[in-house]
Image (cartoon, rainbow, N blue to C red; front, side):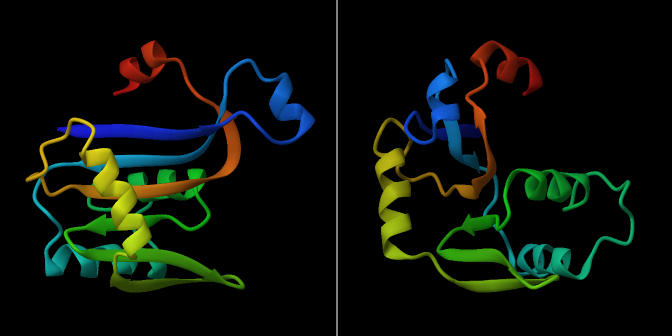
Length: 144
């Protein structure tokens, strides 16, 4: 299954207050499929090298481009490992390491709200590049 969660903020600039719906500041996309394997992490890291086939769907093709359209520095967490994409000037780099304890606690808190604690989620953390109104659940459900 897949879980989609969005963090929203209704505070901020005057433009924010004029919006009828809260604005999305961060989106978490979670999947309870197989945790990333060594080859999955290696393939994910290659995104920083560029995609030789921009029409490729799946296995980090078009979906990766979509991820970057939402977030400047997306982060992927699977099992106890994290990979973050980081821009240094015009170059895209990856940073790999353990999940920071504060982030892990936040994810654990989400899991405690009804998710099966034995489920090992793969989570894509997307801090919003540009704030946007929380979509209606009907529209979002049609997309999924």
